Structure formats: C-alpha cells, structure tokens
Length: 128
Image (cartoon, rainbow, N blue to C red):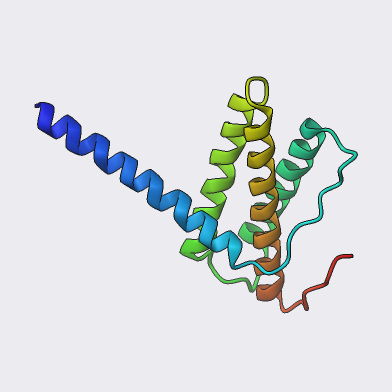
C-alpha cells in the first residue's frame, strides 16, 4: 500500500515537472514578447488577460475555417488556467510569485493570439 502511494506521488511530481517544462519551452519559442503596461494594477491586468483569453477561446471555438486546436495550444490553455489559480493563491502572500504568474498568463495569451492569427492568414504585427 505504501509503495503504490509513493509511486503515485512520484508520478504526479514528474507529470507536474513535465507540464511546467513543456509550457516554458512553448512560450520561449514565441519570438515576440508581450508588452505590459507598467501603470496598470495587477488585478486590472489579470482582468484584461482573462477577458482576452475568453475572447480567444471563443473565436477558436466558433470561427469557421480554423483548424482544431493542437496539443500545444491545449496545454497552454490549461497552463493559463493553472497560472490564474496560482495568481489567486499567491497575490496576497507572495506578490513576486503572483507577478510571475501574470507574466506567464500574458505570454500564453500572446502565443495563442499569434497562432490564431497565423491560422486565420493574418501577418504578424510588431509592437513598439
């Protein structure tokens, strides 16, 4: 009984490590870094990111002519939800961790919007 609990715990830890590593690799492959407004509050930024994420997922589900979401995109969508939960858990006790979660949420939204634009046949725009 103890051995099966230990194996399950190690498997969950390894799965979590793989998930985080995969998300980091996917986001690093994105060449453009998202621009973040330094004057906005973290909660305002979180609300904006969640609104943008909802819009992207809605367009992906309802737009005609777009391909199905790839495994990479689904992993990053799940990562966004995990980082949203992590932000809510750490915003009061660990602001630095909460800010890192917001940065990763921003990178996920940027990555997904670029992928959506590519599928729609739009040329990527550079930000100043």
